[in-house]
Image (cartoon, rainbow, N blue to C red; front, top):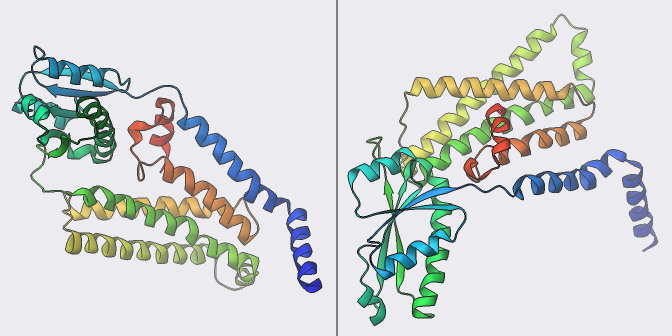
Length: 319
């Protein structure tokens, strides 16, 4: 027990004396809480336009419209019928959702019969639509609680709308590019940590006294990571296409050029970051500091439309 206590106290003292550990393990998480708390608790709200198909002369449609108008995030437009022009407007982004309540049988509600509520969304803004559909579900659940108590009579039926392209898509189609971008970012940023390891072990200094120039060493490392990035691309897109049926809408040469440009961007960013630190641990911490904001502000995990407007220029500038 004495040996354990001694080792434990030595570990505590080492942590207290290491000011960088204080920063990365305690202060840095607190900074993140303040930054993201400040960003995502912004009082400004995004407004999403939703079209409700129905006749305002009926009491039921009026109650539905009023329910949605009470939600500050929704701007409600009432249309008498669903036509091609309205679906085109949805596909172009003029509407976020279209909910068809005109076919609901009010007598069926009183009898407790299940009523399907078609809810149209654009596949081009899939992430945003999924969140909004969840919100609509909550509103409808609350509405039916007022109408029929605990009995579930309404069932939201999401219907994807895709008019601008003939390629059939699925949910994973919108996830795959984010996975590829994240893999390229990880390779570019954390691949440069190996350079820090070599520098810390004085391998780079040793190579500096040989006929090899630093330019050749650096270019060979960049080429290697670029080939790994292309391998990642083939693997990720190949699995997505063969296993999950993802369709590539762009020319493969365009995809190749974008991957090369993205890879070189993150590789350059990674090597640039190594110039600000001297140790391997500090380098890994710095890479995480650079990585996290790009992940959270890129739209991979949640739609960029839900972020405050003042962050839009930051998002556009971020790789």
